[in-house]
Figure 1 (tube, one colour):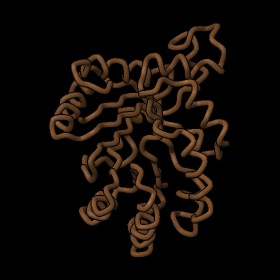
Figure 2 (tube, one colour; figure 1 turned 45 degrees about the vertical axis):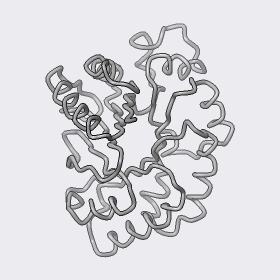
Figure 3 (cartoon, one colour; figure 1 turned 180 degrees about the vertical axis):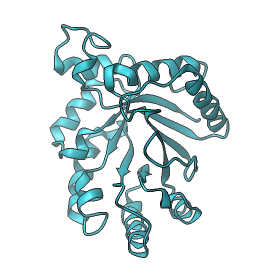
Figure 4 (cartoon, helix red, strand yellow; figure 1 turned 90 degrees about the vertical axis):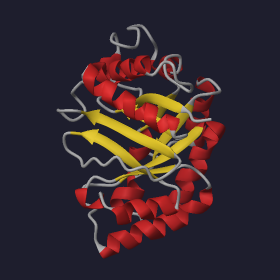
Length: 249
C-alpha cells in the first residue's frame, strides 16, 4: 500500500521556539515533541557531521514505531569527493545510519551546483549508483545544475530504482521526473530561498499532484526546508490538512 510522509528538513531551529515548540521545552525533548505532530523528518545534521551510532539510537528511541527518517548523505561524499573514492566514507556513514533500523527511510544525496553534466561526472554518477545499489535501500538524488534535467540522467536513476528529487525553489532547477517507486520532494521556499512561505494555492496544486502519485501506487516523501520563522512547520501542517484523507500522513 502506498504511503505518504510529510515533514520538515531538520527539527532544531531556534526561531521555532514559541512558534511551534513550547517556550519551556527542553532541547532534548524537541524530537519527541516533533514526532507527535509529524511522521517523518529529514536529517540535515548528517550532511555536516558524522552522527555516532548512539546518536542514531537516541533518535530511534525518541520517536514512535511508525516514524521514518530520511538521512542526508555526508557532504564529504557529494561535495568534496564528488561521488568517487568514497568506499570507506560510505561504509562509515551507512553503518552508523543503519542504527535507525526499520525507521531508516530514503538516503538523500544533494549534489553541489558546480556538479554539471560532463562525461566524467556522468560516469561518476553511474559508477556510484552501481556501487550503492547492493545496499538494498531507498536513495534519492538532488541535482542543482539544470543540465541534469535530461532523459539520460533520469534513465540512469530508473535503472537503479533511485528517485530524482523534485526540488521546488526560486534558485535550483525543477523537473517533475519519476524514476523510482517513490517520489521525493524538497520544498525550499517559493520566492526567497529557505525564508518564504507557500500560499494556499501553491499547496493545493502540490496536493493534487501528490494525490495523483498516490493513486499510481507511489510512496511520496515531502520535506519543507523553508525553516525561517517556522514556515516549514506551517506549510507542512497545511499540506497535511489538504491530504488528511490519505493514509500514511
